[in-house]
Length: 150
Image (cartoon, rainbow, N blue to C red):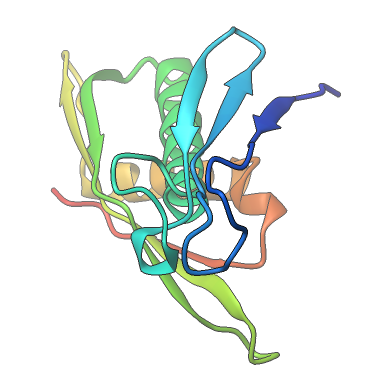
């Protein structure tokens, strides 16, 4: 087991606390000392130059899938040169009628080299295994689709 922490800090920068005008920008600080400026999505009065929680959620799923995929490929001695993803999350109403990120589609593009690059079936199986083993995907109710771009 392991423990993972994030410190969140916000303070009011506006004279009032009206919904339309209060500041949403805040900091996420992680154990390595890295600080990320975050806010709500621009559609919810957030700062456009900040990461919003919905984007971070999508990035978390995409990153976990990638890291799991790379680990599996490495253990099979499959040489990966590059991995890119253009993941998209959909904010919509869930079955209970509440707003939620209901679907995240991962669109990884992986470049292989070496003597035995995997064929289409093995690449598909690697993505399936990565999805099943991804810690973050296993932690959420969101539908996560993996659509590799070859």
